[in-house]
Length: 190
Image (cartoon, one colour):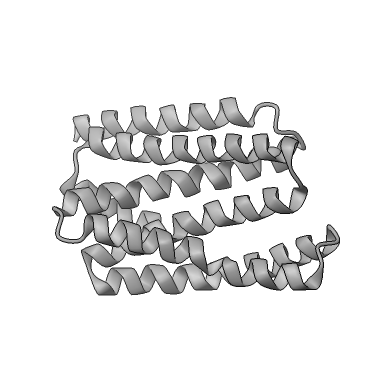
């Protein structure tokens, strides 16, 4: 979706510096959210760690949907359908994880129902903030969410590949810097 829908449009409207800054900002926001989640996991229960991770992901989904809708209803619809299809297996996995961690059924149902709140909050917030703004702002927000999701996927792959998260933060920062340098160089050279 990012490569086909967002980046080509962003390249037509934004310069390389703006794309690099938006993408890097999104990735850094993911790393900050992850640090907060990890801090919470040392002071609270595993259930809240899992829910906070899910809520962060769903909030990002909502930001992307709201930003896309501010560009046009068709873009928003495509993004929403894509996220619904992606979130169904994620929701099933989360429910199974809650169950495996002995979270009572009633609380699992409450947490599942509450999962709609981060998506709606993110979508409403980004739509209201971006509606009527120049297309460059809207695309920068989408590129930022692309950075957030790219780092999330990258972190997961690095942890799985190395069976450790020791080097994932350094690798993620290197990914963001590499993307920024490549984007700026590529757009500068035409």
